[in-house]
Image 1 (cartoon, rainbow, N blue to C red):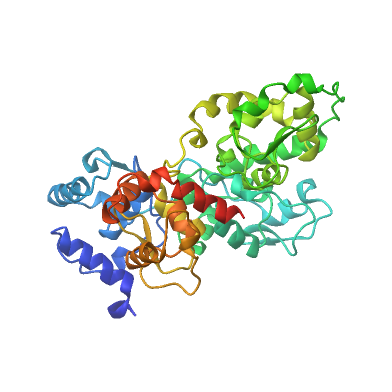
Image 2 (image 1 turned 90 degrees about the horizontal axis):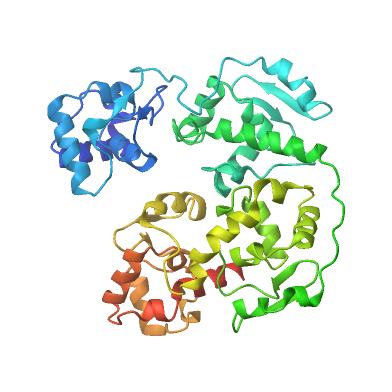
Length: 428
């Protein structure tokens, strides 16, 4: 019902606030078959803002008058959004096209399903979504290794029968458009280049399957690890001759190991289970440690090929664990964090407070578990819509500064490392 649709009403309110005329065709606020985000030179978040103003695709953008562009440009500038509206270019107006990272020519799904790529597997050909598994296969890929795919999106892909990189690698334009609409983010698959990523990752998985077993190096002695423990003062670690320095419990601070190219969420979880939480641990790996972890992930030679040790050496000096109390995320990350960690919850990004609940959630954490938070502070945090550890763990610097001011204790949140404490509670 167009007259009662809240999304359409939101767009009218945005246009009114920006000084734009009401759109006679309310349906024009939707992207329809034309992919939202097919405008060259704009980020995902800014594309969403442009869509809210009634320009959801290249066709709508191409039809903007100079006066409208000036008003939209002022709107973006007032909100500190990076995009220069006048510098944008649109792809062919009105067409869904195949943007960089999109699908290719039409695929014969029946032929693909019966090809050697899926030999002996329980799959079916689907005209909308390509080749799909009819049941969860014995071997699944970590789809979160595709940048732009979080745990929630991976779950929705799995629900449709998508478990392997090779499925996404073989999507055509039709599959991209269908999944874009089905997952409710038209244009994002092309923009984030899921298909080129999936092709690279599928090739790596094939390489893993054909990899030759590595010869076992000489086992290091205790002397080879001398002095390593001083890099982790007052932390619960031990030195293992086979695995190197490992934490004996959940680390007080953990690096985002997925910043190492080749490490996704599943591999990060495996590393954490073995006591690996820091870049510095990987940076200090010797040949035997590398061999041991290659066996752990069942992929001989992968760590050397992807140069985990070199990457970790470059990342370690900037580890957030060397600066306790600092923010772990930027405010530009918050929309993606809502999609991955707060899916389906009644939350919003409210500057400068970060992610807040619009109403009290059914599940609440005991914020008094945070060192430095008592009943009075917990109530104040609730008044601001803060009820969960994961909200505080995802405070950007602006939110930390604002809460320190609102709660009237300069630098206390950083000094007591509320962010780090909440991260540890979440891991536990």
